[in-house]
Each structure stands twice: as C-alpha cells, then as structure tokens.
Amino acid sequence: MTPRCFRYFAMRVSSHHLKIISQAMIALTLFIMASSNNEALGQPRAAKETKDIAAIRLSQTHYFMGTQQVTIAPNAVRIDNTAQLGYVLVATAPNWKVTIFRPDDKTYFTEQLKIFQDTGMMSDMIIGRRERNFTDRPFRTTTMMLTGFKVERITSLRSTLKVLKLDGIAAPQIEKILYAAYKLPTNNCIPVAFTATHNNADFITGMQNKGKLEVLLETQKIEKVKVASNYFLPPANLKKAASIRDVVVGHANLKKSEAAEIMIEK
Image 1: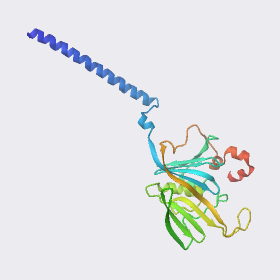
Image 2: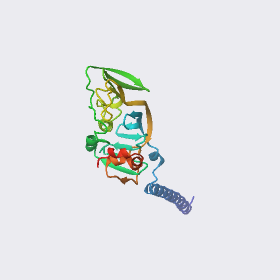
Image 3: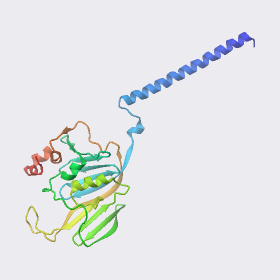
Image 4: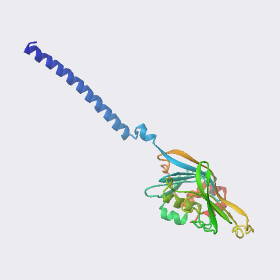
C-alpha cells in the first residue's frame, strides 16, 4: 500500500470510529437526561418505590379503646383503631413526635413525645392511669408462646401481665407511647395482655365488683409483616384540629353520642 493510500484508509477508519463514539455519547446523554427527568417529576426508580420495612403486628382489644391494630418496626409505631373511634396514631425516629389523624374527618394533631406521655389521648379521669411496672407482690414469672412469639407472663394473686421484650423489636420510645396510650402496666416492654381483679366498687356505676376479674387488654394474634416505608407517616392534605382529643373522638362520633363530649378537654 502506497503512503497516499494508507493516509486515505486511516482517515476513513478514524471518521468511522468518531461516528460510533459520537452516537454512543448521544445515547448516554439521553439516558442520563431521562433518568434525571423521572426523578424531578417524582418518579423514582422501581427499587425505591417497592422498598418495604419488616415489622410485627399485634391485633389487640383495649377495654376502653376497643379493637386496635398495632404495627411496630424497630424505629416506628402505628396504632389503627378499628373500633368506633377510628383514629390512627403514628410516630417515628428520630424526633418521635406523636401524630394522631382521622381518615374520615381528614384532621390531625401533633405533640412532642414528652407532652403525649403526660396527657395520652384521653384524660386520666376517663382512662385511669395504672402504674407502669407490675407492683403486685408476691408474683412469679414464666414464659409462653403466642402465635410463634415468646411472651413473658407475670402473675400474682390479683393480676396477670403479659409482655413482649423490646430486644431487637422496638426502641424504648415505643414503650413510652404505648404506656401513654393504654395507661396500663408495660414493665418497660410491649404490653400484650393484662387482667386484674376489682378491689372496690366501680368508679362510674358504683356497683360492688370486688373480686371480679376484668380483662383490660388482650392480644389475639402477633405476626410478622412487611409495610411500605411511608406507612408510619401521616398522609398529606390533613387539617389541624384544636386538640388531640378532638381528633381521637372525631366529629362523626360526637354526632352519634352527646356523652362523647365529656372526653374532650377544652
């Protein structure tokens, strides 16, 4: 091949390579632009949308609040009241602010954890606050299995408390929230069940109930679940209520019963 032919061949090869490189660069630029536009429009990649959180769920019945579904992740908690009250409580790390909202009224109220610990959702006149720790003496401690979970059972002559240890399941703040909401003993754990015998007359009716066994909290089932990453956050477009008790009771419940007004502290 003559020098002139070689130069012509080298120029053709270089032009061909440059064309390929140019097309590849254009394709890469378009791909990056498309990805950026999707994120800018609120369309994250599927992997981000389908990320789930491992949690446990307790199906419970509280003597005053009724049936509740309590979902607990290591750093978040959600309580869905499935009875007449119909409220939802959510709280997450790191600030642990407690928000209660209503799916029907679209109302909400948020409190610092410290304030919620002092007040709970109802006045102590409505839900009598019991000691956080099991105080009956003498007592004995045993363990039992409840739907595949190891539960600690503390029993005395007058009462029985069943709890689930926090270890590896929940942060200490979650126990504080559950105690403030239920106002029943927790022994610094997740409360599972509590039964006690009456020592005197009923506070409201005046009936002599001494010696009568009362079920204050029971758990029908504990299970492992997967929930969406936003499950422990309140939805958007909610209207702030005047107080936490306004949200707990709700306008619909107020219309059903005038007695519900007693629950609200103005």
